[in-house]
Amino acid sequence: MNVLSEEEQVASFNNVQSVLANDERFKVKLGIGSDAFASLKTGNLVAQLWGLGCTVGTGAGVAASGTLASTLFGTFWTTIGVATAATPIGWVVGAAVASGGVYYGVSRLFKSYSGSRVDEIPKFLNTPLDVLATSTLDLLGTLALKVASMDGNIDRTERASMQEYFVEEWGYDPLYLEHALDVLEQNIDKSRLSDMTASLAEFASSNPDCNFSAIQAEIRKLLVEIAQADGHLDEREEMAIERIENALREHGSVLHSVSQAISGAAAGVTAASGAVGKSATKAISSTTSSMREMAGKLWAKK
Image 1 (cartoon, rainbow, N blue to C red):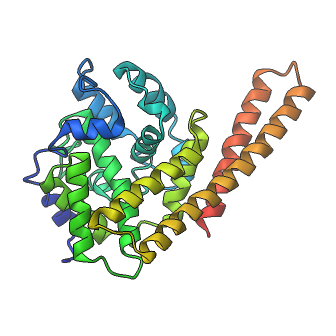
Image 2 (image 1 turned 135 degrees about the vertical axis):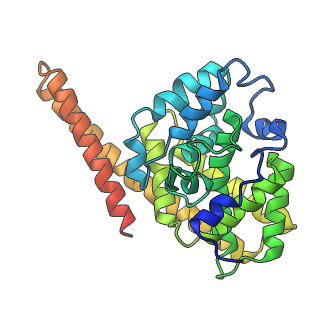
């Protein structure tokens, strides 16, 4: 494919009107009702969702996004009256929105491009679903292309099957999808697997309601679905998916060990300083953040 400059990549979306051609298919994937989002002020919600994950660059950065958990897993999902946030697919979508800065996709492209040359929010983001769909494709598309490019090349047949899958199964607009996959493919070497798995693990660690094992299983299921879009799953694709699984599992283990250490330390501090109150709590919180950040940095060096 032709290598485009950042400006040319942005310009390629000039004629794109929307991210989704069929909202209902995307809602079915998320397990939400047809009337979801209807009672919300769409413009405000689009802006809020688009603002999440803007500055995220590593797994540790996800935890630093202070409003993430309350916005995405609290008020946001509760307001639209769905239980998606408590499901694996909801967690995957939440992680995708939160860690948009990790993937070299459409979200990162438009957020990093000079604000003086493009609108703050792209014109093709008409609804909250469009924002969720953009981030979701950035995540799943990047991982799927990692699988497809394991041998160093992305076969055109695989790319065509991938496009058909996202149009037919998820309801993406074909024109948006074509340009979005172009962006992901051109930047696939910049998206480091260690950073991607770190961001997913850190997101789950920062949100107690998340089940990281369920997230891993859901991502595997989705990657297998995408890989089988051409009619079969070959050994090369299975190996690539297994590599992603192992990376997720290993990073999840690192954070789990850190969390256990933190829990033990917190229990000791609490028992030894019962009357210290706020000071002890602040110290524990600071230690937790520092240890998680250190774990993220150690993982990034692998």
